[in-house]
Amino acid sequence: MFTVISEQSDFLVINKHAGVHFHSQDGTAGVVATAEQQLGLKLYPVHRLDTLTSGLLLLAKSSDAARDFTELFSQHRVQKYYLALAQGKPKKKQGRIAGDMAKSRRSQYKLTRTLDNPAITQFFSHSVAEGLRLYLLKPLTGKTHQLRVALASLGVPILGDSLYGGAAADRGYLHAYELNFNFRGTDYLFRCPPEQGQEFLLPQVTEQLQGPWFSAVGLDWPA
Image (cartoon, rainbow, N blue to C red):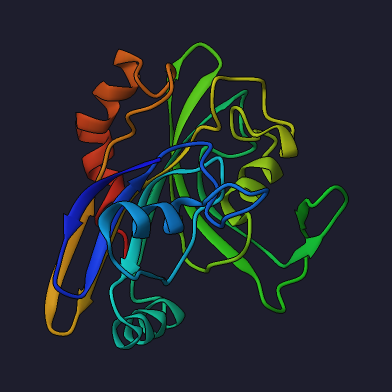
């Protein structure tokens, strides 16, 4: 279900595997409950990842630490970066996607043209194969399904995301790649390349993650 990336005195960072539930449901323990059982720790989730999403998940070790992290997240002082793959040609290759989120059918959300309390996502993309693009996504807000809805609004739903019309694949191709924050006076930066999914493991994708394009556009965005 997960691998441990880093254990600190106040928190734990794990790599959640794709297809693993965040919450326990249907009689099956979710990733948080499983981590508690396997590590013998009481853990406090301070953000979440959708079932299809893999990657970095931060779990506090105490209620005090959880309160401080919740404050950081609410103030948008935790910088998060995601990777996604999608088929097709987007309406635009980079920029910002903004709009209010509204509930739609079948547990879906949709992006509206209003901006009363918008979901805002900054993104860059790069072609990695015929008809396949790699997206680097930075959510500037934290809404349910935000990144999935953002790419669907561009006409390029995430590969494997059947809820939003993504093409069938061996997994949902959304991965939490980086967490960057200051906690109690110490700067932390965690990165975790995707380890699951045949498309994420394509040489063309790996080359982009290690190449100048990714370094140039990815990790110097303003907060």
